[in-house]
Length: 193
Length: 224
Image (cartoon, rainbow over all chains, first blue to last red; front, side):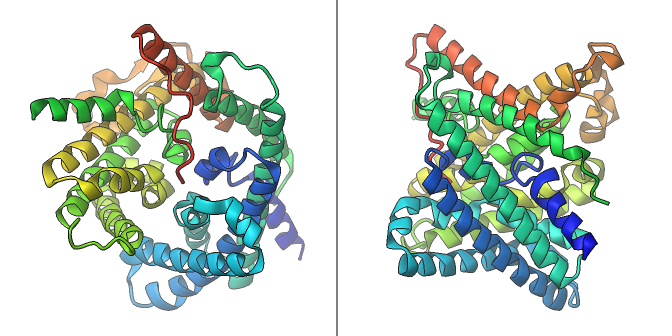
């Protein structure tokens, strides 16, 4: 039990998907202009990452590995992810039409969010059990959502500040992100076993 | 006609540079630029994927219907990535070990997909190939530049281990500019990636401004 807890903390904070592993940066820069959009995106991505990681685990261990089809991994994983995204899109449209409106183009684009494929591929490398994989994926995506919301909060404040014209827009965003990444490096002191 | 190609090339290499202007493909841009050599290798792999998939999409553009185009594009890119992945594992194994996870992740890099959607799906074969190649080279230049700045500031070297990527005859490129203990470690760590990219975007805006061009304030960071 303790190992699982430490692994989850490590996946969520120490090796944060966005700030330490650099996955999912497009959505990080793209949909973090408002807190509620960022939270919605985080929620949808959490769902997709968890579901598709579990499906990818099954595909890897029951299909690709036994038949020696490792070279098809990228293609199959992206197909599994695309289906998971399609499923999420249908669910969100049904459950919360207003969130569906807000996420707009970004919902189908979760397919090309490298955090999803990245976590799935990391799991293949780490050879965890099914339960551990699911928890790792869930914790990673929680870390993703947390950073998305924090960064959206920072950018909401940033929108009110006067920024030199040359730095306006993305550059100041990067510099703020750099400071946030530095803050998250403080977590690296936590021992994760 | 030649002018059209010059425009495509200039768009890809500088005006609409995938990293500095459109802010696409940020993940490998940050993660793989801890040294100039890594950035260069990552850029080349992406350029190969982009050129090949642009060519294929342009060739098949009349057969791909509007509704299924995104899955088809992704599958074409994924197939090209698998080829590059296997080729690099076979012939550039040292570099492959460094780039690791981020080679398969070219599939979910938004830059190839954005170019396929915006250009290759509507263009004849040759311009599409030129566009894919130039965008890829522009991406390589950007990654190498970010990598160079981070490497000089962080570890004081430039193009360290270039001989692993390009062969022993390129050993002359491996420079040491600062004494080994002078590097600012932070530049190699994640925060440095964000910082250097942010400042290099400003540098590009500054150069564009000098050249009398309007700065692109938006940046198409709304895609993917």
